[in-house]
Length: 122
Image (tube, rainbow, N blue to C red; front, top):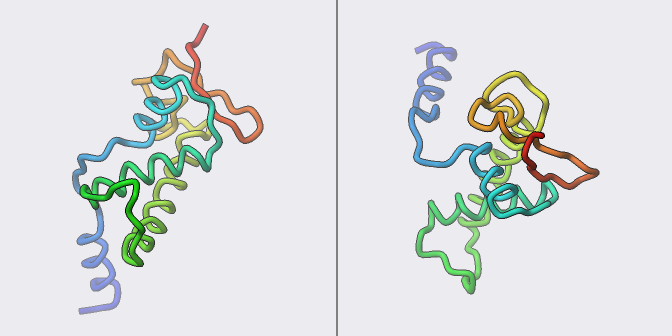
């Protein structure tokens, strides 16, 4: 098997075909609009990371001390969420960008300094 074939085989195994996770746009809408919050990017990333960590470790409680395995998982989830949030808050023209997502065309993402909030379009 060639190197390219090996990489493509591994890529095929790694590509997520379906997921039950909320996408980033859904998550930020729930966090910022439904809960009427204005938060920093870091706070939003932390909230979404915790949600996803609890999907992986459903028995995790607030009083638990994280294991090395869980800390590594947080690092991995953080990277994914940060990249997704960067895409969601940019003014792109794909549904991955909040401002271009047809599900949220009645709302506007407002960036003020390092804070994010979502308001109704007027």
